Image 1 (spheres, rainbow over the protein chains, first blue to last red):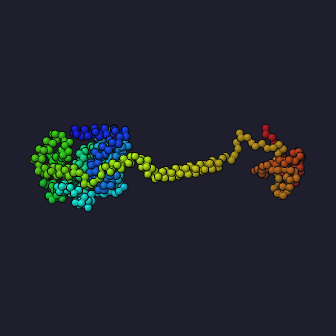
Image 2: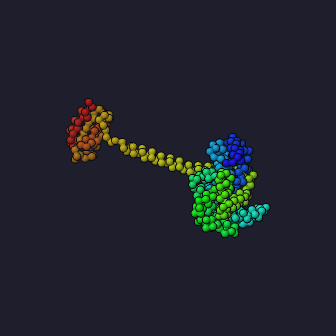
Length: 194
Length: 209
């Protein structure tokens, strides 16, 4: 954890402490601070904006109620993402598993101001992630997107570190064998790496 | 599936180190080693480029628009009305709880009734020597009518002598009779009984010692 992470965690802890005393302004700051991260994280589980908002609000509803019980065993971000993950799984059970759909990969879903390069990159990523299971997508997002360590991911997903390692390994192997081909390049063959 | 462990120890180590180096969470020594390895290994370099691209793509802002302000307003409204939220879930829980309570109560009542019935049926139909016997009224007489005596004759005799049966017949066919308000003494009654045809035995009930 670098200095910026330490500072961010200290701020988050202070906000949680204020929330435990009923400070709604602190809740609003923390909500806005995590909204973008949670949106992107949850978009790996579902493509429905209404479900994503529902999960984010469920997550912060729990955080608001349990702010006083946070003992600092992990980073605040690990705690919040863990709650969001469990709320996300619950929402998937209620609404059905909706992986990245082909029609959602069309150009229509990208904002009008999205540069072509970003659009190409998003398309490349979406096609790659669509080959992964939900758990593998979550691990990839947590490690590459949110920058969590294996230990953090194990806490978030409430599973052994070995399981996280295996999910990450298989996700990377799948992406390695899929993404270059989708990007118009020949896949990296084992022979070429030896 | 092509496993990175198949391609050499250093490449496997590089494969392991890539995500953490991209996260800037790897140690300086690990970073330097990886940089050296990548300069020598074209395959790992290609893999690292792809990993960098993956991280860049994943780090792009979400492509799904969710209004943070609207979401926060809804969350605050939900916090302001916690009772409404709680009661929204109450009916289902309450209904289940009520049904369970009703079932338990019915079972308890059933067990109670059954227990009481069994208890009453299991009352001992015998008397111990220590139990006090119901005292018979003074002047009670044990009478054993003959088997051939007709019921009408027996009833007529009781009526004539103003007697009434208070117990019997017992195992040997004896009845216990007492005078029903007659002024006749029990000795007279006893003699009349003994003199009556069809009466095999008439004896006064001995008083308890």
